[in-house]
Amino acid sequence: MKTLFSLLLILISPFSFSSEKGTITQMKGRKAVVVFDSDIPFRLGQSVFLSSPDGIELGLKTETRNLLERKNSVNLLGSYSSIKPKTGDTTTTFSLSGSYSWNWSQYEFGPIVAFSSTDTDGQGESSNSLGGYFDYNIIQNVPGQEMIWGGVARLLLGSETTTSTNNKQTDSSTTFEAGVQAKFFQLSQVLALRTELVFQNKKVEDDSTNGFVLNLGLQHYY
Image (cartoon, rainbow, N blue to C red):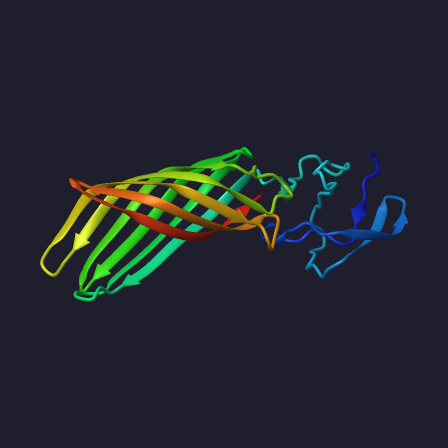
């Protein structure tokens, strides 16, 4: 179709965009009035991209990005625990990581920056790391899929600083994680709740620790 529609209602912000159904109620030349099924905070003057349910362009500006393509993503992932054994002090652990990824439907991968902190009765450990991660999606991550699941692997290289009353020591660290991941697009076609259950192996100098970790976060695609 060569006809270009200049809509009187314009697309919302990418961070809250989801697929919405609209009905054209009036047309005059190249202008149209479109009524959507739900209330959406449109902004006047913003370019809009129209696509069919299959994501095919209908003729608007070709340089405008279709948000539903899910080509890239930014991800914020975190975990928190506070454990008190029968004897001993409570150990509180907090971790946070941010990543960027490229989505090739079956595969997703990208760089990560991560931070973690552990405190046990005045003795603390903090680490800063850089690395990368890889998702293998058994269900391909394409527009329209509301639940994606598969495997995940992650490698982080960095340093860990241990602080006590009279001492402060910094050592190099290597963290490897492997397990399963799932992404749920229940509220939006571009914003997913990401869950992971991974087996973690962390090595600081000559010491090594192992265990299972549950990660929760949000992943926004564009």
